[in-house]
Amino acid sequence: MVKKTFVFLSFCFLSAHLQAQARRIDTVAVSILDRMSAVIGELGSCSVTIKSNYDVASKELGLVKHSDEEQLYLHGPNKLLLKSEGDRGSRDLYFDGKRLSYYSLDRNQYGQIDAGLSLVEMIDTVNKLYGIEFPAADFLYPSFVDDILADSKELVYLGLTRIEGKECYHIAGRGSDKTFQFWISDDAFSLPMKMVIVYTNREMNPQYEAVLTNWQVNPDLPDALFEFSVPLKARRVRLVPLSTHKK
Amino acid sequence: MQTVSKPTIFFLLSMLALAGIPGEGIAQRFNHGGFSRPGAPAAAPARAVPQPVRPEARPAAPPARPEIRPGAQPVERPTINGGSWNSGNHDYSRPAEAHENVPVRQNVTARDRVNVYHTGGYRGVHPYYYHPYRPYYWGPHWHPLGFFLTALASDAIFFSLNNQRYYYDDGVYYQPSNGGYSVVSAPVGAIVAALPPGYETTTAGDGNNYFYFGGVFYVYTGQGYQVVMAPPGAVITQLPVGAVEQSVNGETLLVYNNTYYLPISQDGQDAYEVVNP
Image 1 (cartoon, rainbow over the protein chains, first blue to last red):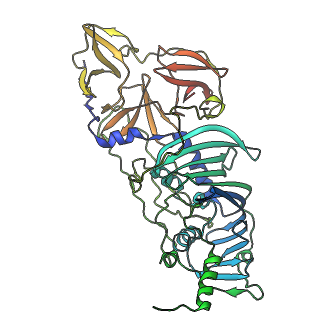
Image 2 (tube, one colour; image 1 turned 120 degrees about the vertical axis):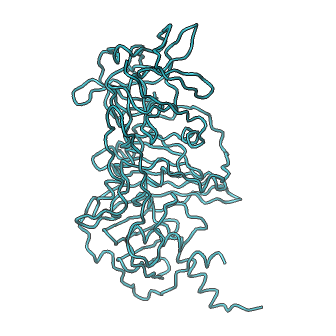
Image 3 (cartoon, rainbow over the protein chains, first blue to last red; image 1 turned 180 degrees about the vertical axis):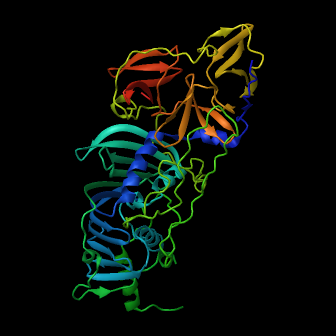
């Protein structure tokens, strides 16, 4: 009989193995997110309407729900226009590849930040330095799936359901400080249709929810769309970094 | 003590109001890293590339994995984010230890094992396609679960895992029983240096290869092929003898070793997809 060469190793003593067993990563969910991220990564331009709801924790009233409606225009590699209306007021964000302009329609004030960065670098930098949020921007990160996997204890595909009349893959996950859910369209483009984040490490567990509709894939967006022109009598103010706020 | 003039206070307040910045961001919170470089050129950070170690000799080489993309890829036209990273080839061992010590409050009483799937359970990505179950045997040395042998081949491999004694012979796992040896489920975590001829490969959606032989799934590690739980979404073409049909939501699934298999058709061939009803 041919001498067998099978050799076994016991892994039960390896903590890494035990840690790996504690996670539950559904590879179908990963595949769906991969598909979505790959399509976004190939887009030259896009526009989408984002309706978001978010909680503000109040000691007197508990979680108070607020909402915004935003229209986002993106053009690779470094142009963005975000028009936002809602409980935070009417605001526009222009990024022409060199400078980010923040305009408050309510106050007729604007601020500008020089940022010769790519689109995602600008979003990330401005978010971290100035606290300015870009709705559902997580989807735009090229490392989106890696980042999800790095933080997920659980990631599960739950099945098909409908969002805004469109059939979607429903994915849920749990990270160290949040739970999250994504709904990804079950069509050729596999674009994100909805996301929910529940912050389990914050008081009262506030939620963020965004529904993404009216996706336009690779629209022809003129450069002028992303250039900010100072409105009549608008007053310029300086945008203050977060570090200044905390002092 | 310094005094602050009214115009200065107004100026600061107007700056805060313009920014409209909440105390804690809530819309953009997935711990993305490597982008906060104000003034830096638009280049993606380098990514860690896992390097699986291949055994020098084995019955058949596993399919080569695609190379991990190190970052933004050169494209003919500019894209909005330079292209996604590592699609289909993620480093699952990349841990998120930064938040391991963050206490998580559980304000809501959550039930364990509540059914959270739509339509009563996990739906496979392949459409249901019933075909009759034909039990499969992986050669004369392969035996189904529960099969009893009075003696094992002299070159069967003994190993111990989780304080249980096992023997391995030609893709089958045994434990001592009633003076002989009974076929048992493959213990998750055991590693074999090579797989017997006749195994098949499958992907469960993430681009990682799974290996399947005798009703057992394996992943390739640097040390060999490790027994794993059946991965949902994996597609295989054969089920061992011992599977039973079970009706779930009007569909006839196959159950083998506590794993549910959805009958499907793939490339015109009868197959099964691992599901979690």
